Image 1 (tube, rainbow, N blue to C red):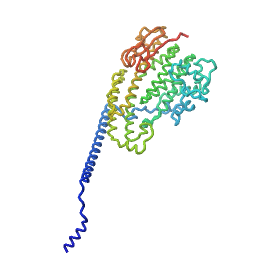
Image 2: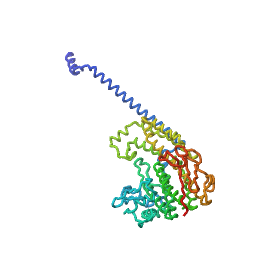
Image 3: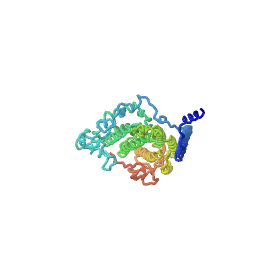
Image 4: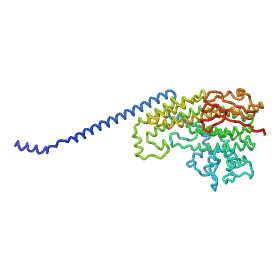
Length: 506
C-alpha cells in the first residue's frame, strides 16, 4: 500500500527538471545586471533632472527677489483704451487681417508701400534698392515711377520731386486720416499675443516700414517743391509711427525702429542742408531727438529677448515645436521623443542662458550713464567659443550673434541720433546768429540742455568745421578711432555721425 502511494506521488511530481546550462545562467545574470543598471541610470537621470529643475527655480527666485521678471506679459506693452489706441484705427487694424501680407498690389496698398508691380510686370514691386549709388533718392524713384501704370503720372518733363509727389498722391487721403488719428489716438498697442512664441506674426513691422518709406519720399518731395509745412507735418507722422514700436519688448522691433529713424533722419538732414526748416520746426526736432534713448530701449529689449528665450525653451520642453519655431509641427512620435529628452537638459540651458544675460550682457549697457561697454560685449565672443560642444549652451550659441549685432546698431544709432540732435541745434544757432559757433559748447544751454557724450568713449562728440557751410558732427565709432567723420563700409568701421553741406540760399 505504501509502495503504491509512493509511486503515485512520484508520478504526480512529473519528470525531474534538467539542470540549467552555464550560458543560461550567464544570460540571466546579465539580464539582472542590465535591469539594475537601467534602473540606476533612470534614477540618476531623474535625480539630475530634479536637481537641474531645483537649481533653475532657486536661481529664478533669487533674481526675482532682485526685481527681475521672467513672464512675457510682465514686459509686454500695457493695455491702452480702445478709443485712444492708434493700432485700432481702421487703416492700421487692417494690417492684422488674415492674409494681409502678400505680394498682390491690393495688399501693398494696405501697407502704404511706395512701390507696386505694374500690370505689364515691367517693374518690380519693391522699387529701387536703397543706397544703390545710382543717383539721388528722388531721382531713382522718379525713374521708377515714370511710365508706371500703377501710379498717377506727372506731366512730361516734370522734375523728380514732382514725379514722386504725383505718384504718391494715391495716399493723400489715407495719410491725412492718419495725421488726424495721430492726435486723436496718441497711444498704441499692437494686438500681439507674445505667448505664441516663434509662431508670432508681425504684420505691423511690414506696415511700419512701408509707411515710413513712403513718408520719407513724400517729405523729400515736399521739401524740394518748397512745401515745407506739409513736409514737416508728415515727418512728425513718420516719427510717431516709429514711436509706436517703442514699447515692444523684442529686438526685431527696436532694429526696425532704428531703421525707420535713419530714413526719417535723412529727411531731417535734407531740410537742414536746404536751409528750409524754420526755428520753431528745428526747436521741435531738437526737443524730440534729445529724448531718444536707444541704449535704454536696448536694455529693455534684452530683458524681453531673455524672457522670450525662456518661454521658447519651455515650449520646446513640452514638445510644442510649432509654437517654438513657427515651423511645421512634429509627428506625434517626434513630439513624444522630444518630451522624453531629460528635463535637466532644458533647465541647465535655462540657467546658462539667464546667467549669460545677468552677468555679461545686461551689465554691458549702463543706462544711467548712457554708455555701452564695448570690451564686455566683445568678450561675448569668448562665451560663444566656450559654448561650442556644450549641450547646456545651445540657447547661448543661438542668441549671442543677435545680441552683438543689436548692441552694435544701438550704439551706432545713439551716436547718429545725438549727432543729428546737435546738427539741429547748430542750425538754430546759425539762423539766430548768422554764423556757426566756434565751438559746440556755445550751444548750451540755449539750444541744447547739455552736449551729448559719445556712448562708447564717454568723450564729447567731435565737430569738424570746414567752413560756415560744411561741417561734421560724429562719434568715433566701434573702432575708437577719429577718422574725420567719414563713415566706413561696415558698421564696425569709420565714424558715426552726420555731414552737413548747406546749399546756397534761395
